Length: 124
Image (cartoon, rainbow, N blue to C red; front, side):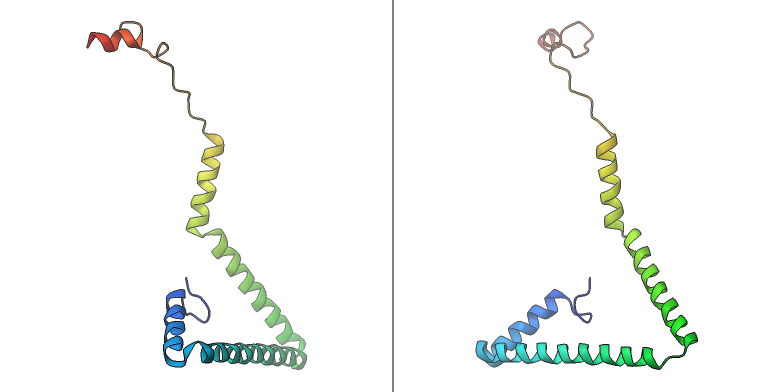
């Protein structure tokens, strides 16, 4: 599964190790803080841009945008409902609730050809 911006956990760890080696722990903290500020500013700029674009759109384009968002939500719902791991968990939970295992009979209750279980074992 991809992490942030398509970068997985292993890639993030490699980047952190390289930052530690190149810049040392003091510079890594400064760089991380600056990267966080840049990401926050980019997110705010994108939010402002999208809100401004929504204001400028005509009613037909707003309807198209609404349909696009609904389609995106539907795709996410389909992915969630068809997730194999989730399906396996649901099926196994349902089976555990429905299936009750029979109790194992005690030594005297076990079916044997000659009577008691202990008699059958001792003959062999």
